[in-house]
Image 1 (cartoon, rainbow, N blue to C red):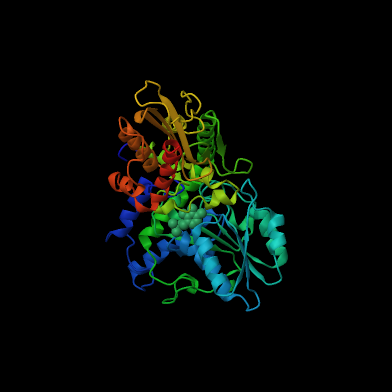
Image 2 (cartoon, rainbow, N blue to C red; image 1 turned 90 degrees about the vertical axis):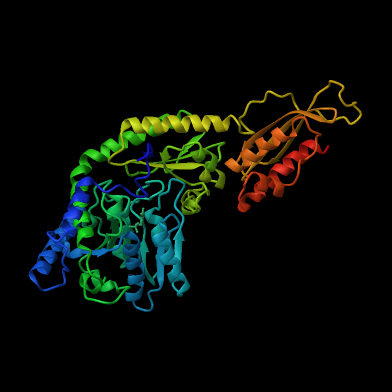
Length: 500
Ligand SMILES: *Cc1c(COP(=O)(O)O)cnc(C)c1O
């Protein structure tokens, strides 16, 4: 993997080699490639194969084969459970309870229902990420039809007490759906014992292929679901379409392997995660998100004080980790989960999610920790709060001092702040009207740091005046337009420094 250290297993996993081999066999003429709906012998073989595979998938969540509906993945499973339950509900049942920290594939269908006139209660978990039974109890109404709460959070790994919430829902006659994507395969999940009505999981988070997943439907809960698509009787009329035999064959073997690996992998990943956190914690000024709660092994989400998330990531080229920083489109909103836990946007934005998995070694964790520690130290060394203060305190410029007098003055100008997107401090040494040296301390994105450093270089030897405009700098240093606002902060800091 081109030297990368892959610590993003919560985003997706590589397919286990045995799973890939199984899928390849299934695809070929010698395999169970036929349409399982066909009545000829190859079709019947494929159908039998699917039913064996279905039982294997079901076994991972303690269910029976009849309770598994194959889908294209957990996004579809979540949509089917939420929209399907709302469509099947009696017209008076128009209220859904969920949490702000759910995955987008739960939030978006719930928002859709809201636009269709359904009431939605958006629960905010406590600072530890936990949604308590009491919070759910307080949200339930006579017209509540469904509660949808995830088992383990994909950003923090925080586990919810779904069993207790299920007991409450059962007592109150409300359906319960749980997105179990991040718990299935990481901890033992028994959907029957948890007593949920619907549970979503997906193959590609447990070393199976992308594009196939399942919805567990409790026996007896089928009548509370309507299909979202039409076009064939497959999957008990809940999900039409030719079943992807090779995907399902891969999913089933992945489930079997995950089941077998669970007892050993859980403790191993927990120990590696603990080791990673202990090393990072030694830096000081770091926060383990979800620290007070039960978490699945292998997900470690850490916020770093006094660094910018984007600059941090830019200094970690060989780490494949996920971030709360708003630097790439996919994760632009990743920090909504951390902000829901009460983290300010700066801390939420300077967080890294390390998710460890089957192929993660202790050596990789050591290397990752080393890289992060070095990057955080380097950035903090340049932070206006923590960087070295080798310059004397601010000397007010005195206009009557003659130029070239040999009496250098240090002018200090600052803009932005610790909670703002950018915090810049310039220290410019001038002699008369000429800049002798200039230095910038920056807490901000790589573009901000680059422009500030570049300006320091330009100023040296020149008249002490602001060289050009933010638009010029953006053009010169190829700063994207959406970051222009940050250059205005640089201008403010320079102005505070040079225009006395
Ligand atoms: C990945 C993920 C999903 C989406 O699963 P897909 O199979 O990729 O659609 C849903 N919920 C959670 C918590 C996830 O981590």
